[in-house]
Image 1 (cartoon, one colour):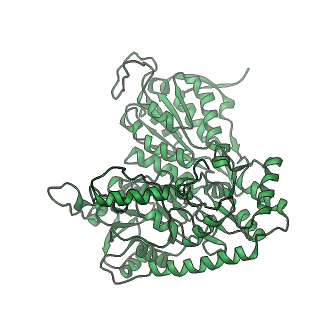
Image 2: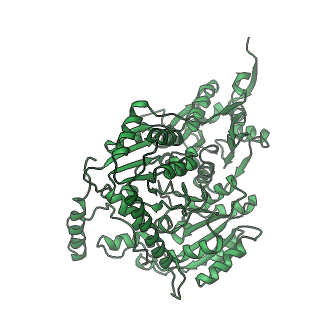
Image 3: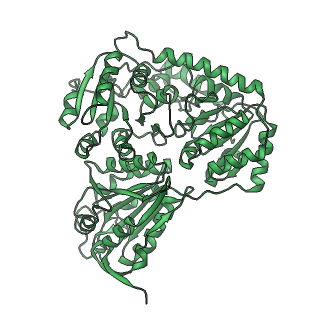
Length: 616
C-alpha cells in the first residue's frame, strides 16, 4: 500500500511546489524562485501557515500591490528565459481581481506565472462571505472567473485531493514551450485548510527539462526549398529565439547563410547590436535599415514571433508581391499565421536543421552588401538623434543616448509603455541576450518598476536600469519601497513630459485636437506640480533631479555605486520623437468629422489601407 502523509491542501501544494526543479547550466535549481504574497482573510490562515513552514525552501516575498507583485513574477520568468517562475497568492476579492491585468500580460507574452488567489467557501455555508461576488443566475461564479480568459489553464480547487491532478497540469503548462502562460488555481478558502492523506510520491522531486521539438521532415523540405529560391531573404527574430536559448544558433545560421536579421520588441538582443547583419528593430518602431529590407524581402523567415501588428506594420510593411513567409515556431497557432509555410519546431533545433539542410547555400552577395550599407547609414542617423544638445527640454532619444553612454550595452534595460518602447527599440544598442527587457506584447503602463524588481531578483549580478515616463510612474510606483526593503538596488530613470506624451502625439497624428493626454490639456482646477524626487525619497529611494544630459550621465554613474535604489528625474519634450525609421500603423481615423485636420487624416488613412495585405 502506498505511503501517505496527512497535510492540508495548502501544505500539500506548497510542498509540491518546493520539489519542482530545473537544470540550468548544469546546476539543479528550484523551478519556483518564490511566492509573492499579500495576505487577506482568503489566504492568510491556511496558505500563510503553509508558506511559513517552507519559508527557507520556498521564499515568500511581501509586496505593496497585487498587480505589481505579479508583474515582478513575470519579469523574473522573462529574465530567466522561462526556465524559472514565481507564484502570487492573494485573498478572494480585490486582491484576486488585481491579478487580471498581470495575467493578461503573461498570457500575451507567453510567460509562466502561477496565480493562487483565494476563493469562496466550497461548502457555501457562510455565503455571502466578505468580498464575494454573487451572480444572480450562476451559483458557481466567483471573482476569480475574471481570470479564465487570461489563463492558459484555470482550475478551482473544491476538494483537497483535486490539487494532485491540478498541480501536475499546472507544471505541464508552465514548463511547456508551446503552451506556456499563466496558470490560475483558485483555492477555496475552506478547502485550503482541509486535510487529506496525500501519497508521498506526490512530493517526489522532479527535474523538468525543456522540450525541444524537431521539425517535421516535410515542413523542413518546403522551408529549405523556399529559402533556396530566395533572392532577398530576411530573418525576423522574435522572443522565441531568446526563450529557446537559440542566440548562438541564430548567429551561426546568419554566419553560414549571410541572411540579414531584424528583431521584434521581444526578440531584441537575440543578436548583439554590433553584429554586422543585425539590422535592429523592424516594423512600426523599426530602423530604416530593417524596414527597407522588409519591404523588399521575397522570403521572410519568422523565428519565434507572434507577428504582432507593430512587427508587420499592420501587414503593410512586407510589400513584395510574391513574398513567402516561413513560420518557425514551437506553437502551431503562430507558425501558420498569414498563410505561412509552417515549420513547427523549437527555434534552436529548427535553425540547426535548416542550416544543415541548406548546406553551402548563401544569400546573394549584393543583397547582403546592400543590408550592411543600410545598417551603416542607420547608425549615423541614430548617433545624431541620441547625441546630447543644449536643448532646454531633451528628447527621449537624447536621454537614451545619455543612459547608453554612461552605462554601456551590458546592463539590463527595462521598459514597457508610452514613447520609450518605440525609441528604445530603434535606438538602444543591446549587448548580451536578455539585456533588453521590453514588455511590449501588452504594453502595460505600470509594469516598469515592478518588472525591474523581478529582473533584478533573477539577475542580481546585473545592473538593472528602469526607464519610465511620468504617466506610467504615477500608475504604479509602490515597488520602489519593496526594492529598498529587499535590498535589491535598481536605477530608475524617470522622464517627465507632464502627461501621456506618446498618445498625445498619436492624437495629433490622427488629426485630433490635443485633449486629455498632457496635463495642460486635461480638465483641471489647478495644474499639478508633482515633486517626483520627494515622492521617490518618501518610498526610501535615493533621488535627484537633473537638468541636462551631461548631468544625467554623471547621476547614473553615481547610482551604480549607491547603497539602494536610485531615481533620477529629468524633464523631457512631449512633442519630439525620432522621425527616422518607423512605419505606418493602422489606427482608425473617424470617417465623419467637422474638423479639417481629421478629414485630411482620414484621406491619408484610406490611402494607407490599400497597402495592407488583406487576408495575407
